[in-house]
Image (tube, rainbow, N blue to C red; front, side):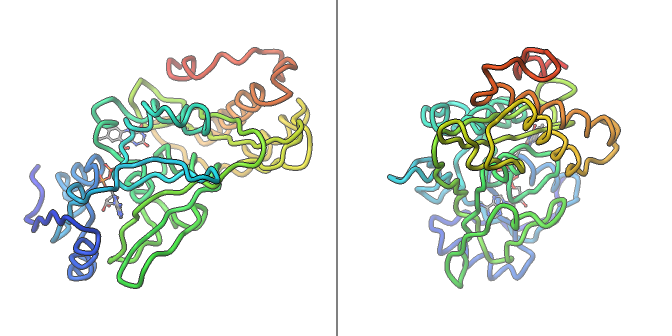
Length: 289
Ligand SMILES: Cc1cc2nc3c(=O)[nH]c(=O)nc-3n(C[C@H](O)[C@H](O)[C@H](O)COP(=O)(O)OP(=O)(O)OC[C@H]3O[C@@H](n4cnc5c(N)ncnc54)[C@H](O)[C@@H]3O)c2cc1C
């Protein structure tokens, strides 16, 4: 199917893009990688009157670390940039593990992390990663800039808190205190598929004690018992839906399993045997599941 008729603009500055969005009065949409928006337009699930393509705006394709360790990911940083990043493996293990698991190489070459957060697909991978890391989204509009914590950014499936004239200019991950560890495990029916279940865990430790965790586990050593407790909490908090990829019960069980696996290879408990007596088979095994 072809999209319905729309006007197309490709401004060269953020200010011009924001002006166009404001002019669109709720009928305009930002086009970033187009990997989610274009299929929706072709199916006519999205029928914007104006597309504001931000790809000609310079200086938005970065991911970089500030002096204090804050990580900033610009609106035109592609999934592939993060997959090939020299920065992430040493500094953000959860993101480094998630990036190659997004879709397939073609989608990763165009799609953006910020676009994925804005799209707010419940089966997308980056929202859970950014939530576990305590990240935020910086939006810019006619009234200036504001930072929105990731926990408040997504309000429901395919919904976010952006005003119609705001652009998400970057995603921000705060600096970690102590040693960062963690990971991302994704259960998919075949390589490149959306997640049946995706679990992101980000842990910060100082002298073997957890000082911050992307799941509810702080102020105690990462023992096998604490891992089991965290996995129970995460599974209890998960709200999966039964669909063609599996039942809610199955998905909740996988959340628990993945939390145990990631935490078992994290910090001091990695030296102990993983709960259940099983060695962690690593993400490749999940991809093949
Ligand atoms: C075959 C296929 C498989 C996929 N598999 C996965 C997967 O396994 N995991 C996964 O996480 N994703 C997957 N995706 C989605 C992919 O990651 C998209 O790249 C991503 O969801 C959207 O990013 P984008 O830059 O392409 O955004 P676009 O498609 O350009 O935009 C998506 C939405 O976000 C809005 N938007 C985008 N950028 C901004 C901005 N800066 N400010 C304000 N609004 C903005 C747009 O207006 C639109 O509403 C898949 C897509 C395809 C086509």
